Image 1 (cartoon, helix red, strand yellow):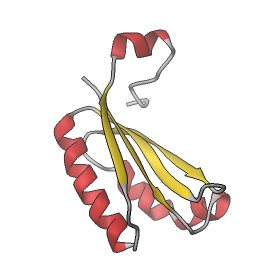
Image 2 (cartoon, rainbow, N blue to C red):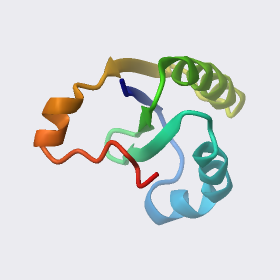
Image 3 (cartoon, rainbow, N blue to C red):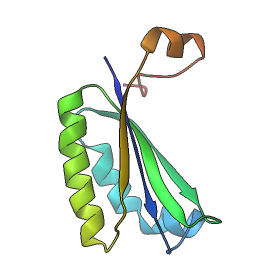
Length: 104
């Protein structure tokens, strides 16, 4: 079973290429999280929101990461951090071309 984590929060900072440049080291750190298959970084400059969609190979690592990441975001000054957790229906996702392997 795979698990999806959706996180978003108000973000008044930088977006696009500037965000990509500023958060390279954070992205490298996140890439090494236990159980993480992949993360998609999300941003909406118009609504001033940022976040991510994460795919984990187990629920324990997802919950551990969510606790760690929430604390990290709060240490950066973020609040109103919203998170949702979903189980992935793998048979239906495969039909609609979802890559649940992350190339691993």
